Length: 180
Image 1 (tube, rainbow, N blue to C red):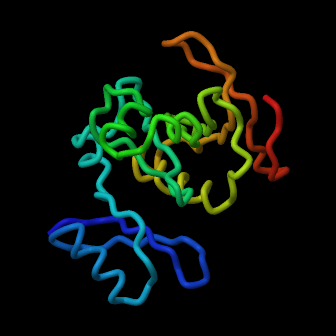
Image 2: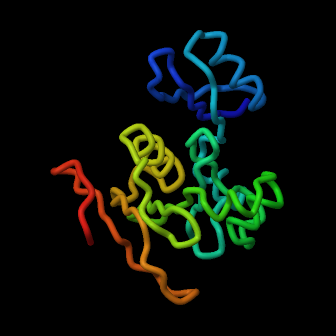
Image 3: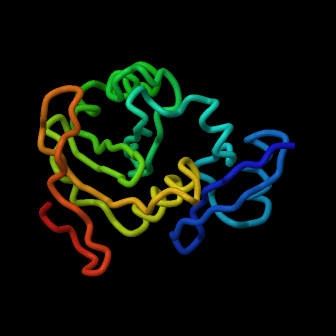
């Protein structure tokens, strides 16, 4: 028996998650749908140690993601040494043109970063639901003892290997994006 974290969309359109004990991912998703909770859109192993063992961290100790065609975050869970765009094309079947325009990002200790396209610009579509989904996933991956993340949006391009400076930072008190 394994524990799975199942994210789902409720009938009112909001997102939620539940932890299910099951023998397989399929069984966990089926249990959620039988409970009438809503449509399952992502299922992941819940245990942080299992996550680390399954090598979802890329070589820079970031968790990389992109927003799929339904604006749901998908995480690079294999071939972590590959650049995200190459991985998306090779394993997910997205075109190079789409990959160069889509929203991508990463999570690292203390930050969640979004950017759009090959110029790493800010993404105007970040909303509370997306931030909440990524925050829950951040806690799942890094543990509840991890420091609270700061959300950033857009990056000033720098040299490969150095940390690129963010353009915008989300101000929790003002509930708006501010120039860094």
